[in-house]
Length: 320
Image 1 (cartoon, rainbow, N blue to C red):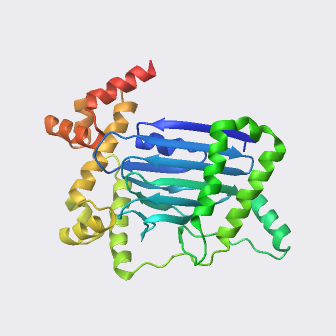
Image 2 (spheres, rainbow, N blue to C red):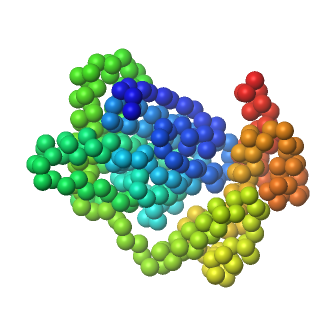
Image 3 (cartoon, one colour):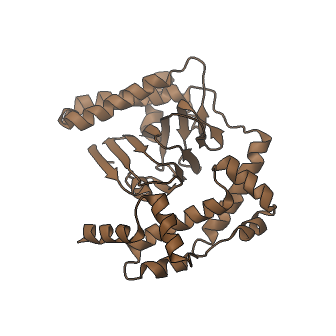
């Protein structure tokens, strides 16, 4: 990894926000209605990465972290309805991420997320120095962390201070000593997080069952990503009734299966409007099962805050 690098992006697309984070394999889908406005900041300090994300819309995020790293994040959201790997999260919460396993985050509108990601090898070396050669670095599972006495706000302040310095005076971090001390502070904070022995890995049986239904449905969607999928298709793929499918989706993603499928198809159309620029808007819409073009345009405008023609015109203008 480069010794020092900082980027800050204002994003008008959910997937652009996902792609703005270096070396992470992520996919974001916009679920709530309105024009997307996102912010992403990414700071690299040798073996340490610090990043910050904010979005004004509800996002369903899934993916994997940077290989060979240990990562923790502090999320902050007002209101209920957000969850991480099936566990509800409200207010300020500490969560662990793992490059070995895929994570899923339903990030409510307005969620703030600040994270630190550290290469495993230097972190293990630091741990051996601090705790002895026999110390075994325990890699966390992707789950929320709750430990009595652990103050998420301290980690939040440290990450915020690092990003604030990068925004306002990056030249200060060009000094090797300053960069090294900040990296050590962040690594020490991660070791403290690993020491929290309260990873919430168990889910209630009912939650497990509903998440399993939605997971099967979304797996089917990914395997048939180039097809217009219907609710009966999902019932057949998951082996449950329409009512059971309805309950599972409303509980997990807070949308009915019909609405979720429409939102996913609209997200696919939006991406193809950028990548298939020679195809007409009507052809792209029809490819994803939208046969009523005026209704499609209204649904698209409601979700993304602009007409599909405006999306294409903006992207064509940006590409020159």
